Amino acid sequence: MQLVKKSEATQKIKAEAKRLGFSYVGVAKAMPLQEEAEKLKHWLHQNMHGSMHYMARYFDLRTDPTRLVPGAQSVISLMYNYYTPKQQHSSAPKISRYAYGKDYHKVLKKKLKQLLRFIRTHIGEVHGRAFVDSGPVLEKAWAAKSGLGWIGKNSNLIHPRTGSFFFLAELIIDLPLEYDGPIKDYCGSCTACLDACPTGAIVQPYVVDGSKCISYFTIELKEDSIPHSMKGKFGNWVFGCDICQEVCPWNRFARPHNEPEFEPAPEMLGMTREQWYEITEEVFEKLFRHTPLKRAGFKGIKRNLRFIEETSAPD
Image (cartoon, rainbow, N blue to C red; front, side, top):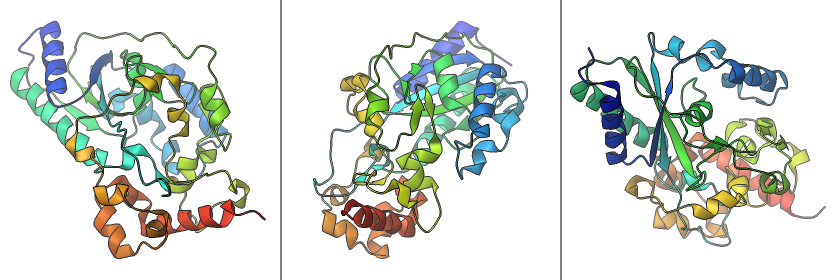
């Protein structure tokens, strides 16, 4: 039973989310995503998901939150800053900024559970589920619908005040709230991300072929080798890629995060090229077992290092 008015409940939830460290919070009405469903269907039909077969599973759940949470009324979208100006050693193979600290899935899931407990304690008995990039949820679509930004030409959600270096998370609940609306797309005529992508993964504005992305090859692809057609296109990226975010003009407004769990280990930042190429499984486990790099694993990182070394040399 809801104990407070929708407006008051919405304000309480947003205030608590901010207290928990989320930078921005928006709310949208839970309903089927018809337009987004058609886009996803076309994207899958074009095989732009490569070997990410999970993207094709649970299509109905992915496009309709009321199937994920029976009686769902609201999708609460939240953004959590992970930007840091700290950099790795200049000679080191590069990892994406989001992977510098502890695994964001665990850090944010804990906060979402705290937020759900707060709602149940201070607003009323609510049924819902928390998602952090790990369930069949079109998180960028929901964040855009709730006014947290627009989906840019590189397919990232961009906030007009602080850019795109954010994790997205959602609470889908059976509580009606006051809903926010989408904001304008401010990409304009800019093509910086399309021009900078070394593998041509951004095949046209707002469409990213996931099977061509450096992040796909260095994280998602589980084969023993990376296609030789990608030779010389990875630069020095060994896990993920930030190129399309680094060139985005909106990220000049990025501000350092305040989350201790996302602070990079000094030992990692100090690793030289030689130390990366000589890394043992024992050292890898010690440094990266609690970080996103565990998704690629020691074998995956060694494969990526070999590919960079072998294909950066001239024929």
